[in-house]
Image (cartoon, rainbow, N blue to C red; front, side, top):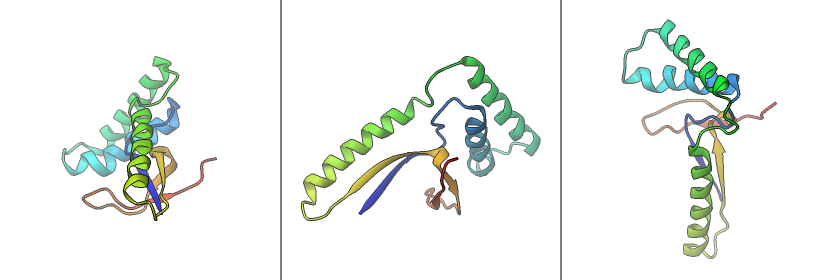
Length: 116
């Protein structure tokens, strides 16, 4: 059985386009459901945030991603311990490897796409 543990809205790298896509998705799909942000401002925020991260020159992406990987290892160990007859494969996945197919209140609906 496959289990995917995703760090939603966390870019894997400091690349401009990945951060822009993650930021824009968050603003268009998540934050706008709670906070009314005008559409042009959403694009500006995504652009400026991505430029800022690129200029900052960090070598790694979000600090959440290593934590998600540690959590996936811990979950793998736990599932193996409590279910000896069931084979689990737990994988940590960055947001950039997925696109939203559909959304609901708990954030399900991710579909795997291949990275270039």
